[in-house]
Image 1 (cartoon, chains in turn brown, purple):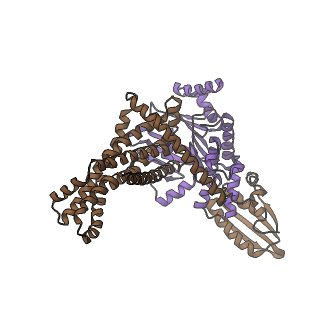
Image 2: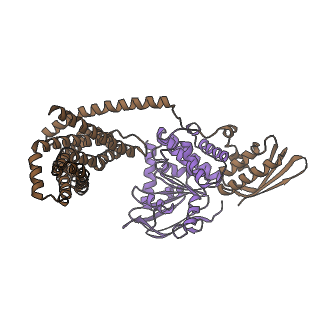
Image 3: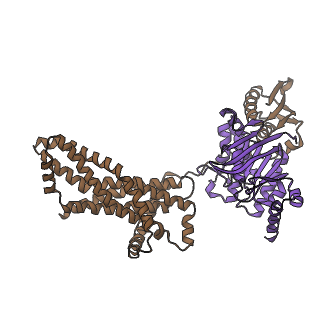
Length: 370
Length: 255
């Protein structure tokens, strides 16, 4: 432990004696103490006695140099005594400029610059997405036409993780959405004595809209993000570079499998989600007093194959979006520790946005065409 | 330079989980020494280092640093002990979200009560020491590998550690940068009496900086040689040790 003794003499002279070891902890205490006390004294000259002190390193030296430069006693003459040759050398590692320089701040762009940069990046991203879509359009069919060259094991693995493992959560969420849809529609329809049309509501909404959308959003959160993280980590580890230099195209080697798997698994999961949604609705209708036979009759009379076709078409489109955007965001991963996290976030946002956008577009088109 | 043991490793069995890498290892490091731990790839040098710096609990045995058993002290004591040494990781391990300056300043901010001007002074002097004064405001990703490593060294040194552990400091550095780093380490050891423990493959660096070498071996799972580098190189009876030193030399000359 270091100790600092301060003695005030006549004529504004101050004697400062430091002793003990000046390490990080003791220097901090000394520094604050001296700063406070010397400030009150306003000395004209300071003599520092150092023969009994030992420097542990740069932190102690910073204190000595600061005192020597008059940092604590502006205008006073400072003399140091008893400084060892070694310590003298350490003191020379500080320059006068160091005292004036402040902490450097990372460059912060102005708001217009940032807005412009954002717009440019957004546009770049749109272009990249279009280019990527083009690549997929050529890569996917050629992969399907040459099934021997496709890594089906990988497709199966992804389908299992993205599909089979998602069954419980799809069941719970779709079932509950079905139940809530019926519950919320029950009162308004009852006012017209049209509660039997609850079957239509649940049938149409599950098959044409909520089934595919809920499944796709779940898939985006569970699997699109996983694709982005997987490919992103591979990129950070230079595994993608290794593939490229081996003459293997990462698109054909990694992306095609994921998009194919997503394309196959999303409609399957969607059928399951439709069933679960209807089942959820049925449970509520049953509790409202409708006999099962009546509900089934009403359902089968209204919801036809064409509705299921609409739902499945949507789900196939959503599957491509989830597989593609997840993979693209993974491939776009930058550098640094937060890069993979960013890629994952961006993939989920982009997937959900595009899913909702595609759903709206598709439903609007159907409405005007029918 | 006093001769008290600043690090004492007693009957240490090193390894992960069920896998034993080194068995019943004993050695001391004295204050002010520069000890190089060498050995073939996969012989457990880095694992040994992890046990000593407190990252990995030993399978059995003890690690004493400054007369405290690293793995049998209170959390508070342990924290104080950890503050007394610095570690330079193989990849640098700079925090990617902070500037170089803030990376080096972090230990001062979090662990000391120094005034602002003092922190800035110390950070600047450490960055100048490693030749990075110009790179203060840059992000780690904007630096080359060698510069990142030097910035990491500045960070490891900023609390004035008594012991500095270095994991493969010369990996990924060109010979000139590497020689510069060796010189820097020698200066640190001489001017401030810092104890250095270096895990390395670079035999030239071992010959330049080390006062003593420990060679670990994966076949016997123990330390097979110990002594000043010149002695091991010239006079070791163990053919594996001689081979290790001379193959290293031959390769250097061939390059």
